[in-house]
Image (cartoon, rainbow, N blue to C red; front, side, top):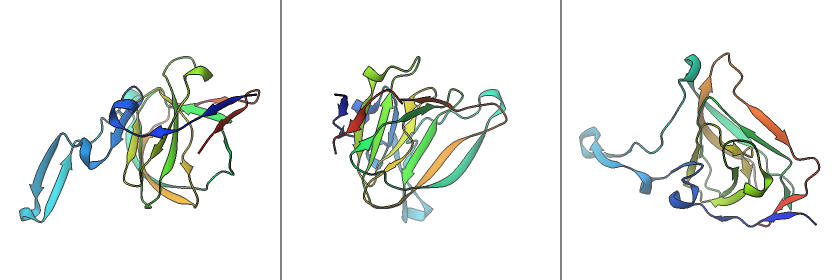
Length: 165
């Protein structure tokens, strides 16, 4: 026995309780810039990085796919900030989240992100680390730097949670 998560397609409406979907369709405004040679899809995510003197960090994470079936063994959250991921490879990936507050395995949700969709987890939202599919994948990550602890983890050793993808 155990819990089997069936990932749903990642949509802005379904993901709203957990954060923002970063994609051109989410632009609050479209601007022509650079003398008309560039379109700016403006204001795609609400970054929240400044709590307790935090500073923005821009990094690239390279994620290796887990063996299938994917087992959910650990979840993390960042209580002081948001954390944004945008895929740099043209591959789908999995997103696993749970509500803010005390972790509750019954609140786990899974999504399949399309190759051009990123996510911005709101501060305090529980999420799995990047779940690349099929091949190692790079993600542009924008998160908070600072001296305060900003990562809580919960290990699901006694749980049998898999993702049916």
